[in-house]
Figure (tube, rainbow, N blue to C red):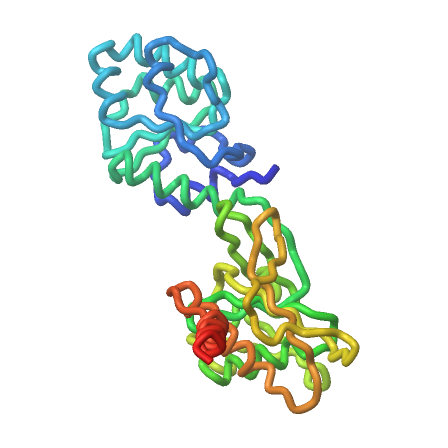
Length: 307
């Protein structure tokens, strides 16, 4: 199970820590969802998910004011006794000194933000879903071609990096060379990125390591990209039958998500970069409702019927 440090969460969400005396170094967040502890403030703790970040909004704060500071401080203490990661007050709602004292007593920080509760909760959930997503690392190259994330795979030395270099020359953007980290952020979306240590670098056999960002400019690279299409490069095998129509889609599965996959045979004279570019455009056309293979099939069928 993946976790995110509370310190990183505070920096990313730009929240203010009202209890700097509380040590947050070892506090980790392991749940993507937020919890608004209205029932817990009323004393109901059945099925309480204490691993979630606790958010106090206008409704909870109004209820606390009606209950009085002493009673509310007692309930906050009980919530903190479950070792929640933190409690965040949204909308710059006032935080009583009694709450801060309870926070120091239990070692659970109280944070505050000016953002409204719903927007803050949604943004936290979105960010945590990416940070805590299941992930794998695979050998390949990820390039943004016309907005489509194209993952190029194949045996070592088959020419993936050279294809990526040609695509950069043609105005597309490199996300990762050699190793691609894939995160499953939803049942429909895979996000690819480069390891921090190799980001923006390309290995070219016979030349060595080049820095794509330095050589071609910041417009030639990108940090993350959804994986929409996989192109598998393989040595040409004259004994093998290759798809020449494309009426049926082939898929490859990563982390339980299926992605459209094309196998491209490599032989002298083939411009693989243009093939990858055309595959990305064709994939985009299919998403927009136009399938060239189906159109040709319908024309041929219609012609045979009328003959």
